[in-house]
Image (cartoon, rainbow, N blue to C red; front, side, top):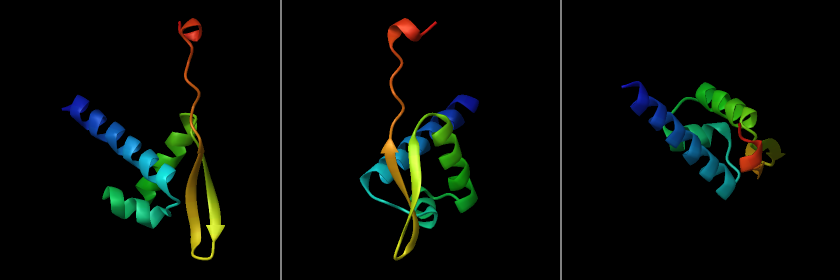
Length: 81
């Protein structure tokens, strides 16, 4: 069912946001926690950025990790049309 697939994907996006906001994680860790491939993680990060999330890659002693530093601002009712 297309709706069920879309719902599953949106839940996975939300889980990724939750994980990145709780701690810095790299693509491999995120892929393992979500049960998906690293290329899929890259596509998810690109889509989340397109949706207005501010996610940056930060290098530390162990490599590159993602950090969530901003969320999209809510749309006010007067701007919805």
